[in-house]
Every structure is written in structure tokens, then in C-alpha cells.
Image 1 (cartoon, one colour):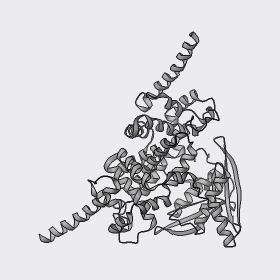
Image 2 (cartoon, rainbow over the protein chains, first blue to last red):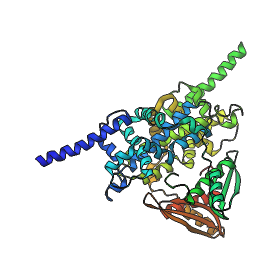
Image 3 (spheres, one colour):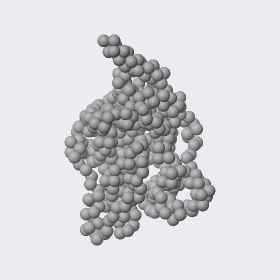
Image 4 (cartoon, rainbow over the protein chains, first blue to last red):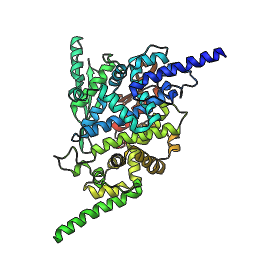
Amino acid sequence: MRFAFRLYNYYFSKDRSLARRLRPLIGFTPSNISIFKLAFSHKSASSEKAYAIQNNERLEYLGDAVLGTIVAEYLFQKYPNSNEGFLTKMRSKIVKRKSLNMIGDKMGLDVILSEFNHTRISRSMLGNAVEALVGAVYLEKGYSVTSRFVVNKVLRSYVNIHELEHFDDNYKSQLLEWCQKNGQAVSYKLLARYKYEKRDRFKVAVMVNGKRLATADDFNKKSAEQTASEKAMVALGILSEEDY
Amino acid sequence: MRFAFRLYNYYFSKDRSLARRLRPLIGFTPSNISIFKLAFSHKSASSEKAYAIQNNERLEYLGDAVLGTIVAEYLFQKYPNSNEGFLTKMRSKIVKRKSLNMIGDKMGLDVILSEFNHTRISRSMLGNAVEALVGAVYLEKGYSVTSRFVVNKVLRSYVNIHELEHFDDNYKSQLLEWCQKNGQAVSYKLLARYKYEKRDRFKVAVMVNGKRLATADDFNKKSAEQTASEKAMVALGILSEEDY
């Protein structure tokens, strides 16, 4: 009996501790704490058999979609005169892996993750936990509360929108610089130019020392070269796959 | 005065006609008809200067995100025991261009599009109009009503989920078949195998007559080959870029 009591106490104190940590982050005390525990349980922590459902991957899948929509709407309202191209680019700057990893870090999710997982907490686990947390909030509270949580507690707290507007990940110049330093020759090749919905579309390849490392296509050559350069940097190991 | 009256009449009858056509499709009579008119106005119909905001591209951007989330949640609830990989695959089968074009066609959006645009109605305009319509419903009614509209009037009406479960776009075998017919040699090459979050990841290329047509990477070789084959079919013009 005493043992059961201790177990009970231990168990619920861990729940209470999670609820206490989450409150300032999400703005409310979760009532279904088990969903939130799941959000921080990496697949390596769950048994093989229960793999499919007893880890955060399903919540990540849901949270990724919900987060994408909330960010899409936030930008849609914030920039009433901007076109779809600008909005899409801004959105991907906010929800890309590297950015979510940084947000998870600033939210201090590493501390919570350490409590529920006995592996090393990688950068990408932080970003995944942000998505899973959004998924958990959505399941408990629905779309409007989740939207308020994301806008107030995530975007306004950790994302500098105005900085992002002017920030351009110039992967082409980063790649050129790296290649110069390392005595490698870079060149870009236009593979195809075709019409898509009456607009020109460009497919380019980036070659390093004559070897094609990556291709990309876009509505203008410059953007296609940027994307191809980014991919090439991943292939060369300059950019981490976790950040990509 | 008589002219103004006729103009007034003409103008409002066009709005009334749109509202009448939309009612059975979306389940309610739109109150802000101008958003819905915008949803069916292709960029070719708007003047260059007003390009950014007076066409359906912003609504498409918003609707694409909202639709993606609603489908994601629908599948999340429908398949409580399926893992993230299955859910992601199902989602992309539903929201991919080809599928949205088909849905727009079945909804009869071509008739509405013809009223608002004086260009030929392409397949891809149908899919874009589905997205823009979802965006318009969302702006007018918010998330819950949009979710009911998408689930009842789109998914349950035009998408055969059980067929999709078992349907596999086997692009590899389609490509092999086409190449055999046309006397072309196909081969697949494993370009790289690396670890990503403790899981193996495979990068493959598909070569037709020794020329590398496309590459793709995925968590297993088979899926990577499928995606690369699909891209190669677009490059060869077998699959239309509009459907991709």
C-alpha cells in the first residue's frame, strides 16, 4: 500500500511538473496531460511494437499542418498587399527546420525533452517537439486557442518577422565562398526552360568540380540557383541535414 | 438612368448567379460575394498593376494551407492506429495537383471559371480554384465551418478514401513500360545512403539512355525510386507538369 502510494505520488508529481512547465509556454494548464507527455516522447523512447502510435510522430504530423496554416493566415492578414510568392517565402522561412529548432531551443523544450527521453537531445528533436506541442494544443483546445497560442506565444515571442523580411539565405554566395576556400570549382547549368501556366520556369543544376551535386527548379533562375546551392551544401556536408 | 439601372441589374444578377451556383457546393449562401468572385478570377483576368492582390493567388495560398490541415486532421482521426508515414502519404494523394484538378472538375468549377475568365480553362485552374474556394470559405466562416465543408462536401463527396489506401501510383513500372515501348534503356543508381535522425536515407537517380533525368531521396530505396521515376516522367513529358 505504501509502495502504491509512493508510486502514485511519483507518477503524478511528474505530471504536475510537466503541467507546471507548460503553463507559461502555452498559456493554460493542460487537462489531458497524457497527450502532452506523448508530444515529448521521441520514438527512441517507445517500444518497437507500439512504434506507430506511442510517440510524438503522429502529433508532429498534425502539428506541422496546423502550424503551417496558422503561420499562413498570420502572414495573409499582416501583409494585405503582398503577393502569394512573398507570403510563401516568408512562411517557409518561419516553419523551416532550422527555424523551428531555434524556437524549440528558445522555449526551453530541451529541459522537458530530457525528462521524457534518455537519449541525447538533438537539434531536430527541438523543432519536432514544437510541432508536436502545437498538435497537442490543437487536440485539446481546437483551432482558435491554438492560433492564439502560436501567434502570441511563438511568433510574437521568438520570431523577428521584420528581420526575416530582409533576410535572404544567400546559399549561392555561401557555396561560392566555401568552394573558393577549399579549391573547388563551382558552376551552374541551365538544364531546361519551359512554360508552366504561361509562366517561364527554370531548371538548373549546380556542379562542383564537374560533378552534378543538385538540381532545382523555380519561376526564376536566381531562386532555382539558390535552392540548388542549398541542396549542394547539404550534399557536401556544409549545411547539416538536420537544419535543411 | 435607365442605363445605370440596367448596369445595376446586370451586375447584381451576375453576383446572384454565382451565389446560386455556390450554395449547393459549399452549403451556405455567401454574404461577402466579392471574396468568392476573387476566388474564381485567374491572374490573366486581372490587370498587371493590381496583379498582387486582385486575383485568386493569395486565396489559393491560404486555401492550400487550410485544406492541408483539414485533410491532415481528418486522416488523423480516421486512422487512429496508423503511423505518420501512412498519414502523410494518404494526405499527399488527396491534395496533390492531379487530385485537386479532378475534384474541381467534379464540382463543376469549370462553369464558374468560364464566367469570370476569358481564357481557356486549363486542368490546373480547376485545382487552384478548389484551393481558392477553401480560402474564401475560411475567410468568411472560419475554421470549423470550413472543416465541415471540406469533409462533407469535398472529401466524402468526391474522394474515395478506401480506393486511395490501396492505390499506389506505381511510377516506376509506368516508366519501365513506357521505356520498353519506346526502345529506351532505364536504370536506377543509388547515389548516397546516409543517416538522418538515426534512420537510413537513400538518394537515387534514374537514368534513361545513360542520361540522369531525376533524383530523389527518401527513407527507403523503393519510395525514392518511385519519386525519381515520377519526376523523370514529367521531364520526358509523359506526365503533364500540370498534374505533378
